[in-house]
Image (tube, rainbow, N blue to C red):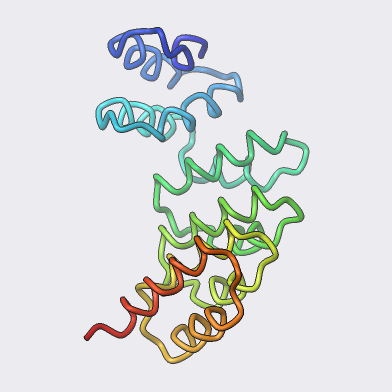
Length: 182
């Protein structure tokens, strides 16, 4: 795990470490592998995803993300992992996590919902547009950019009328433009 997290380790060492973690029984291995997914190195990302799949894949990550006895940063990493699996088997669980007391959990759950299938969870993304956290609203707006239903369009327009955060406003404008091309 330490090798995978060590920025001084070589690419080869990172790849070997990611592959070795596929047989780990330590829950921290899940964290290290999920952390390795956010890389531009496609081979490393695939090695980490493959090892996560061996360890139980999306179902293990969904349980870890929902488990409130797990530290918040590990739950956030589990949600990152879920995003890369794009598994919609537990959309209801992700929708519940999009309402978690933690803004970091809500943001990552909303991003995962947006990536996994915005049309399947449009109502949850519309609700997330009203969240108190700007990151959550940003990810919801981004996810709704591919939804062309009247409800999605109306929600984006309504939020744009009252949104004060510049980054979220940008996402809402982009969503509105993608929803109504031309």
